[in-house]
Image (cartoon, rainbow, N blue to C red):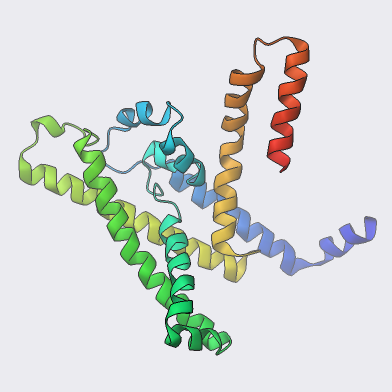
Length: 228
């Protein structure tokens, strides 16, 4: 253990990479708390407090979706794009050929994946902006003229696209200068950031105000599920 710690202390490159990853994590968490301009976030409280699909999606955004922040879409466009490209690699010989070309082919596929990610980000941003706009998400939408309302929706869409693009850029920087795969690290950050609130919710539902034997049983079950 001592030799492992000594090796770590002497490895300046590893320490720099870990420090860079932590800085990127700070930047990411800062963006999670910056709301999209002109949005009434109180409308979202009822959607995310009922424990439905929105709450599940919010887990993978690190709470950004419930706040409707700049990073509300998280890295879902990139993940979806990666899955689509992997499936197309099997069906399209050209992509399969790229995959066999080594590092150069991998970089070309990566560029295609990013372009498709941007397209999906635009589609998702439009769908979310228009959909939530119809639910009264835009501030003072009842008193707005149609051109002003349209510009407000457009601002929301552009902000969400910019946020998704910035996350892809952060992922690339982590992969280049930090530790691990950048996109995977961002997803890990999202899940870790949501764990405290999840544990508090589990405690209030299954442990609080229960008898001691039931507390022990419920705590053991929760711990086993988390470990698995």
